[in-house]
Every structure is written in C-alpha cells, then in structure tokens.
Length: 155
Image 1 (cartoon, rainbow, N blue to C red):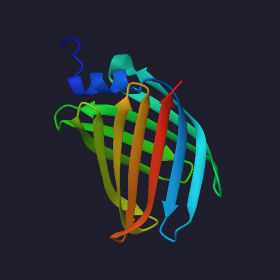
Image 2 (spheres, rainbow, N blue to C red; image 1 turned 180 degrees about the vertical axis):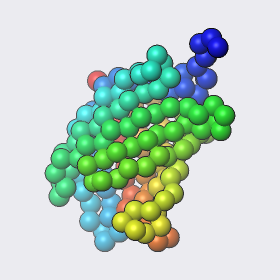
Image 3 (tube, rainbow, N blue to C red; image 1 turned 120 degrees about the vertical axis):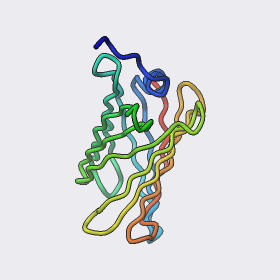
C-alpha cells in the first residue's frame, strides 16, 4: 500500500482554511436575545495533509469564554467532509457535509442535545481568500433554538 493522494475536497479545505483568523460571532436566541462574541481561530494542517485541526477561542457576552476545537477530514468512501467538534458548552458531535460549490461548504448534524432530538445546519461561504461567513441554525424538538452568524477574517 503506497501513500494515498489527497482528494480535491480535502485539498480545497486545506488551501482555504489553514491560517489564523479574527472571528466575530452573533448569536440570536429564540427569545430575541442577541449575544456577540469576538476572538481568534487557528487552523493547521495535520496528519501529513489528510486533515485540519482548528481551535476557536472567543469571549461571548453573557457566556464568557467559549472554546471550540475541531477536527476536519474527508471520508472518501462516503464522499463527505467531516467536522468533529468539542466545545466548552459540552457539545460534542460530528457534522457531515459537502462542497456545494468551490466556495461553499454545507454541514448537517442530527442527534440528542440535553436529551432532546436536535440538529445543526452550518453553511460556510468563502467570500474571498481572506474572509469566510458562516451561518448556523440549531434546532431542538423540531423548533429553531438559535441562529449564529460568523465572520472570519484571515490575519
């Protein structure tokens, strides 16, 4: 068995994501409350180019320090990009998704959160080589629980 070749989906992810980013986050809760956060995201290539590890470290109004660590990879047999997340809010789950086009990556997760059937939809859009926008919708018991908008700017 020789070394594997990186799939294009993974090469795109590494080329577009690796680096250091400033992050702004806006959380819209179902009760109308809005929380804002700022911080950094660091993304580095891992496993000889077969994955990316990111760490996001934010300060969020009303929540305080929020840290998220993620592993990103491409599962070639199911043709899915995976984003495995662990956060300081005790969220731990694996999102699976695909490149919708050369600049848009779409993820979905379903499972249990606080004992309730839950889901997350996340769309990341590269508006330029140095700016990404993200939109996340969190659903619990079939109802939207919160929406989060992200802006990432490469330093």
